[in-house]
Image (cartoon, rainbow, N blue to C red):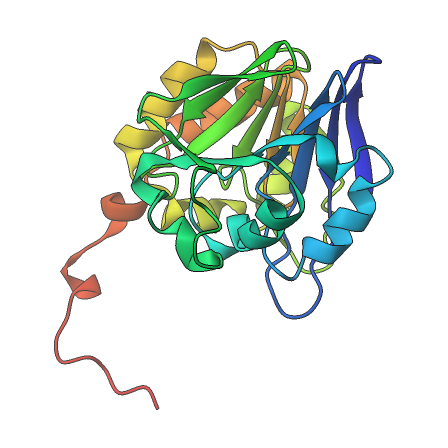
Length: 263
């Protein structure tokens, strides 16, 4: 299904949810359209490709796709790269670290001249006269990890940051208000996911310091519901800033030999 997040007549942001068929993890895909030209964000893999192409047709013709953005290298992010390169003239934006990994998803020679490496500090992208900001989110959860900030809609497309999944959960749900945010955290796997996947308290603090200087009205992650309104965003930042995660939580018990028998 699709959800129109923003539309001022010339600038649109669209979310696509629940398109994954089969046993793969559910993931959201996004499209930003400005003056008829588009950027597709984290398009997913083969489980989403055909359904996403069909859903996009209501808003946008693939021939006008300028960019495909990949927040990092995971299959649920960009394993469908070959399909988009085949049917469009778009270029793929991905971290410098992953430019030589991307061809493994594609036919030989398909990526030649079609991949733009994102430098560690991020970059600005011009989409039909409107600047979009690609901002660093390193080690959240991947080295060479980025997010997209749209200054028109004031939406931060946050990738895996903010992921929240629970069986039967409606990914198009919008969480608004500090109390609703706290309740949603308690009802989903949000805390557990971030403690396992994020890169440590230092990373959380550095990213939050950056985010507090941005005019964010809506955090829209790749998995699960989104977080709308300044009160909700501030509650999110307050929670994430002090989060212990990843290497913070490891002890010697996590590195043992011999390995316990399992099968």
